[in-house]
Length: 316
Image 1: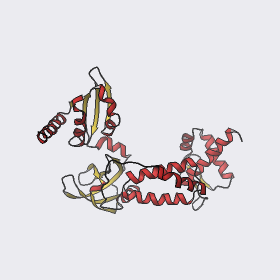
Image 2 (image 1 turned 135 degrees about the vertical axis):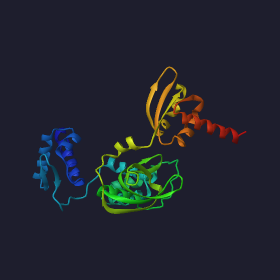
Image 3 (image 1 turned 120 degrees about the vertical axis):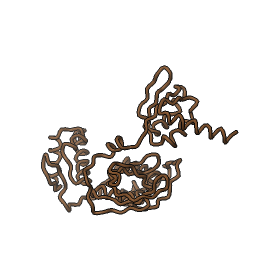
Image 4 (image 1 turned 135 degrees about the horizontal axis):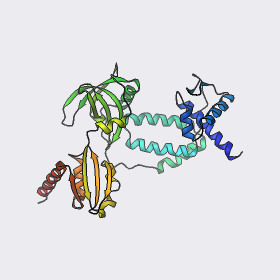
């Protein structure tokens, strides 16, 4: 079998996997995914139909498998199996508890369809992979909170939450969740708050109670990143940093919200957008403050001086 037919076989198998995993698959999307023409996708779909796969739909409208049709379990490659194990380790350390439990159940199902040799591969390798998390995980007060949030997003129905603010005040809100994201070691909801009539971020671990309603969303929403960029409550900060220290900031500068880096004769201008302007950000800057100058905002310079004063008082 020559290379052309091997590529075609791989592509047709992958198309079948796409049909199994999605309700509707468009030929245009498949053509982009596999970097072939739409006409080639039409021929591949016809090949599947000739092989007895009951595909519903037509060119231009998308394809799907006939409802109720079952295929044998999907077989995974050795590389895919190893990627699952690595992802499982990451989920154990960084996922929310309510997600981790469901992922563990899903992995048990994946293991059940593996070949015997692949099961041995997992047994031999999973104890050789670990992820070290320097942050301690806070115990969740609600065990199934993220699945509830995701269900409300999928169903486009409002949520009622009891929420504890940063100053320990408890408030009741009705929200329309746009999406969830993980940042600075915490899970957040980006949502439209019907009380404030604006978009807000809510930290998931501060939700004390949550319940779904049957009330539909008041409006349609786009992708979560569109709202995070425009409604993220972030402050712009700019530093002038000596070039000699830059190699020590390679990873941390991105973690703290770097959006622009410009090299000048005086040093490197770093521009950030951060939500930690009153807490974590100035404490990070103080670790290399003798190599940096605050250009903006003035409040950051004031906060640094306050921290330095406290340090001096403690160690006199």
